[in-house]
Image (cartoon, rainbow, N blue to C red; front, side, top):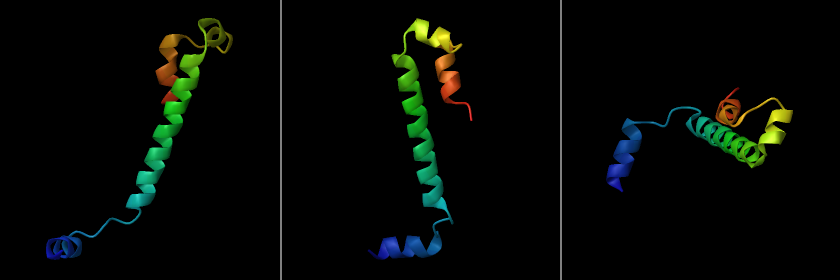
Length: 63
């Protein structure tokens, strides 16, 4: 317990760390869902929206 208290007083948590962590996790989850949904489409369905199988990862990582 003393080690934890000592470490905590020396290295404070940066402001917004947990907010940034949560935002990163949500972004990752959204991208993962997008990739999953696009991969579930057939080649014909992808062609209808102007994509190919090779475009799936790129589209998921666009901002």
